[in-house]
Image 1 (tube, rainbow, N blue to C red):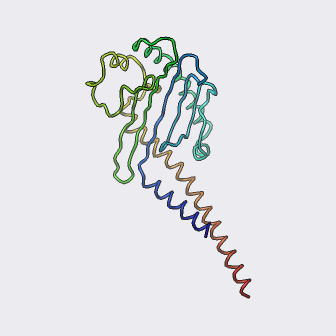
Image 2 (image 1 turned 90 degrees about the vertical axis):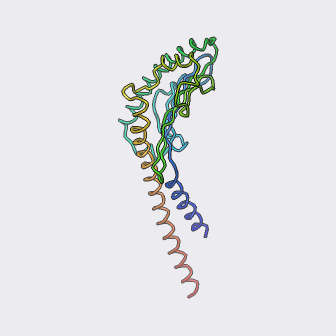
Image 3 (image 1 turned 180 degrees about the vertical axis):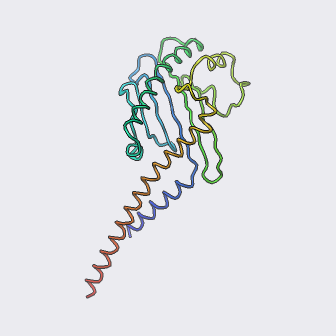
Length: 221
């Protein structure tokens, strides 16, 4: 009964996950000043689960989930590492621009950019995710469709910095096309591993049921 209960929980969990909305987010963070934190960090999240990580101490993009580790090759990680190294330099420049525009002192300061997308399996609705933050305060989010609520100094800052490390991809194209394609790919990677695990669990369940039946037959003889 415990095996059957566990199997039901796993199957229900997978079905629920497949029916849910999905999201892909990358969080870029650069820190300046005297701190124990790495100067630059990238976190990638699928459905709020971290699946990749980079920081300026390890200087390498690495997997944080089993499904990501087994789904891509060394060339993928080399390419992502090169992008991260390039992004590090861009964000070092950006936080310097931020400190000038916000007239900050030479203390600890944090600049953050969150970018990504989401979609719904059932409705087909998609949307972009984008937030800009400095020292824990988000002064532009994806809900702000115009510049009307942004002070002129912040408008100038946003115009001055380079946010997209790839440079070849504008935000709109990335959020509505490229990001959605990546999200579908990563969800597929995760689902493949989950299906593999479920198949193995079903086989174990069938074997355990057969053993129980054989034992019951032997006892009744």
